[in-house]
Length: 112
Image (cartoon, rainbow, N blue to C red; front, side, top):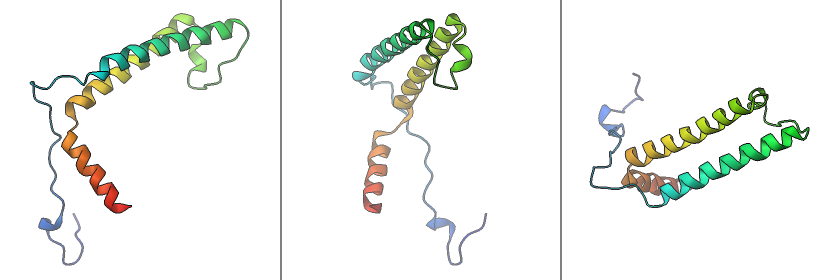
């Protein structure tokens, strides 16, 4: 690894592992409500899209257009996207350090 002239390994910022939430901390209270609302909105989006397609509309999203030919496949894709979002949110709240978030915000404020 190349270093700048006059720089030492001690000048590099310390790398610390991601903080883990200990077992005594519980899930943030808003998350279950957000999960339910996300699932409800995705269900309505699937319903309204399939209804519009039956009426002759064309899917505008090119990434989804290929699966709209089969309602079952479309619903599975919407469900998988919903579950992936919930899984990511669960993983993030467990592995993200609130202290680290505050430190990053503070550093960004100094850059402005």
